[in-house]
Length: 190
Image (cartoon, rainbow, N blue to C red; front, side, top):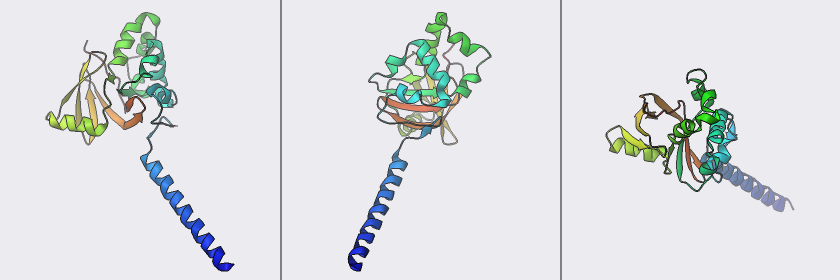
């Protein structure tokens, strides 16, 4: 009886250790948290973005531009997703003006300049930058061309006006692409 109890206890302890090891492995392999929300690789860009408290301005803009259905589509898309703080750095009144129905075309242009028609994880972007001697041209679905660079081990995106945005959270895997959180709003050439 005591031997059976020791065997059951040992088996239970081993099972518990294996379960813990699997849980740690799953946590390490999971997507990063963004804006206090877990991002799920089996959900679309829009399904995940709506849960990030750091991207409420971006989500409102995507809705105002009528791009929800597009970004729920098959993709693949790479989205450079500005945070609320990034939008707040724009001149006063800019976001409010862009969200007005009469400015939908301009808003759509700016938002689609944050989207690339590919599934580009940071390793691939870093390789393209290195292969191109430190500066890789990025063509967006909005017709903008930006430049990807690296600085201090971080991916930087230079927009059409010479502004730099840093990727602060990379490789947020989605069912239809990837999100890279950035700290600036990318603007097309004037």
